[in-house]
Length: 223
Image 1 (cartoon, helix red, strand yellow):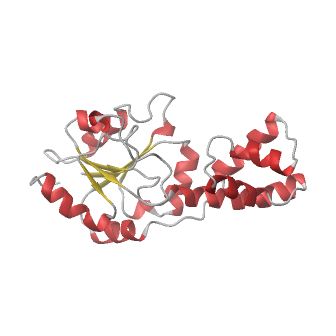
Image 2 (cartoon, rainbow, N blue to C red; image 1 turned 90 degrees about the vertical axis):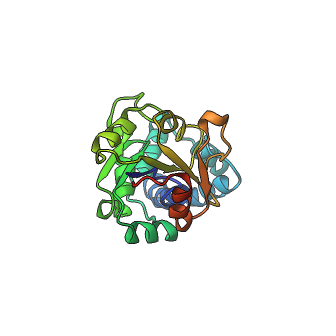
Image 3 (cartoon, one colour; image 1 turned 180 degrees about the vertical axis):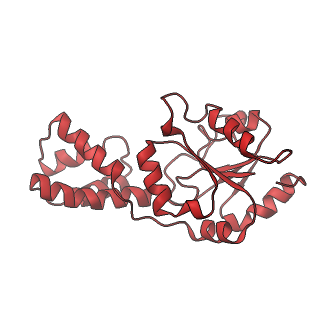
C-alpha cells in the first residue's frame, strides 16, 4: 500500500496559510474594524516568521487583542473552508495510478478534514487517518496510524510512506520495514534535512512523476 502525508506532500501547506490569511482579513475587518490583517500575516510569513504571526501582525497594525480574541483568530484560521488545490504532479499520480492508497496526517482533526474535503481526496484514497481524531500523543512519529495502515493493507503488501518532514515522518515507518520516500517541494515549510540517518527517507523525489521509477529501484515487490 502506498500511504501519503498531506501537507507539503499532496499540496503546498503555504497555500492553506494564505487561504487562512485571506479569510482572517475579512474576519478582522468585520469583527474588529481593522484592515490589512491578512496582508500583514502573509508579509510576515514570506519574511520567514512562523510561530507568532498573529501576535506580530497585531503589533504591526496597532491592534490590542485579548487572549480570547487571539484564540478566536486561531480558531477562524484553522476552521475556515480552505481555498487549496492538489499539486499538479500529485493530481496526475492520484488520477492515473491504480495502487491502493492511504493517508496519515497530523494536525487538528477539523482543520485536516477541511483540507481533505477541499482537495476531494476521498475520490482517490480509501484509508484516511487524521491523527488529530485521537487523544494527544498519537501524532507522528507514534506508530498507531502506521499500524492501522498495515492492518488495512492486503496480506503481503509492501508498505510505502511518501512525506516531506524528516523530523517526524520517516523514523517510525523505517523501523517497521516500510519503504520511505521524501518529496522535496519548493516553498515547503519544514527543514528537509534529517537530524540523523534513522530519520532519513530511503529516497528523495521532487515530483510524483518520478515516484514509480524510484519505487522500482527500491523494491521489486508488488505494492
